[in-house]
Image (cartoon, rainbow, N blue to C red; front, side):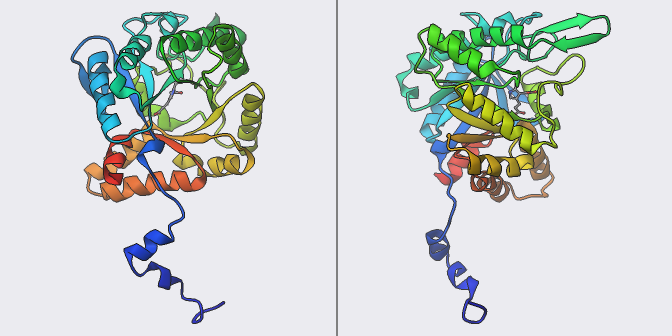
Length: 329
Ligand code: PBG
């Protein structure tokens, strides 16, 4: 089987040949486009650190969603920037909250039926302190309370399902939230709504630009007491085991490129549908290099997405969704 009997280059000679033997494919239906919805009308405000990504008012978000339909994109992941924040993040479960309002507008527009409406279930965009749960303070010391927070997250999930979300995606990384959400959804008559758990979410510096986009940076401390330590692969598997036991229907791995080994390990171990989130920092660093002319935009973008698919993700949440769908045509 050695050279010269075997010549690997025989199958690389032409694009037709390469296409025939290609092992991994991308398609627009497996891309999910995140949207950041803000109050107001006619608003389309670009995020400084994320070229091509905007805070959109509901009317503009509807237009953006129509563009996504035209490109064959599979779904949207919705984040909200509420007009006001408070200690508990009550805007997150407000019937007239920002994402609830957007969902109702999307659901009224039958042209958007081909998009799966996924919602991020978290409190950090809605709390005045920017943490993903309730903060208990004792002098200088603070704790993110677990069990009172997951009760609130369950309320958020029910509220969003009631407004028309197709899938709820808890991204907080508190313990027991998938079970709490599943139970609350079932009690609220939403037995058919799947939970996509951000089961393996690391405490990552790559979320930096998102926190500008969603105005959700913690006002003190960091998220290391709830998001995972980037050093731990075995712990990621235990997190996933727990979420499956609590009723998760799908998994989301995050970030993507710095954690492709974790994506691969999860793919080999679990049969649930699994996505990976190419997060804001992954997008921004590539764009920074594109702006300097240091990397070729289209090829680099497609290679970054292909690597995530090859690692085992069925679908990809990415700020490149529209650009990549255009290339895939
Ligand atoms: C909310 C949430 C975050 C992201 C998705 N959901 C921020 C965070 O955990 O700090 C990050 C997404 C990105 O960076 O693109 N908890």
